[in-house]
Amino acid sequence: MTTPPRRRKKAAPKTFEAAYHILKDNAAILQQQEEPNIDDLMTIVEESIGAYKICQTRIEAVQKALDEAFSDESLTADNTDDNGSETSDEAVSD
Image 1 (tube, rainbow, N blue to C red):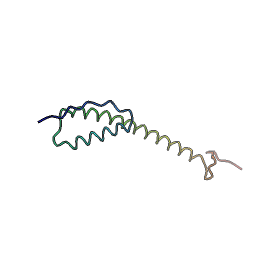
Image 2 (image 1 turned 180 degrees about the vertical axis):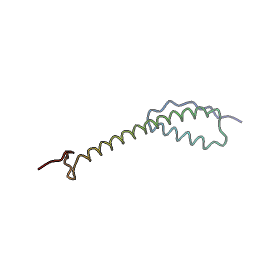
Image 3 (image 1 turned 90 degrees about the vertical axis):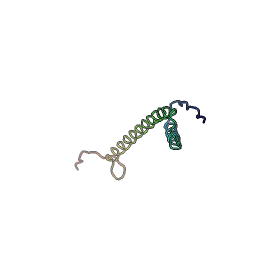
Image 4 (image 1 turned 135 degrees about the vertical axis):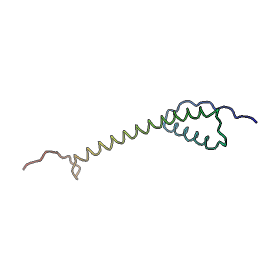
């Protein structure tokens, strides 16, 4: 019985897409194994944790940017009338 060669740890991903593919690939590897390859498990887990952190950081950054964009948009919408003209919070007397 021969054992498969040990996996080498990949370089840390720099993009969300690369990190996502590592997570997806590692999940597939673990799901397809009939018996866990304990020798590769630590490498897979370490890679996956690093990739997860990259994805999490990017998702949080995008969420923050969206929250800020929608917050700014609602502030702008609050200061315009139905015609798109800016309005003032002060009452105008005739």
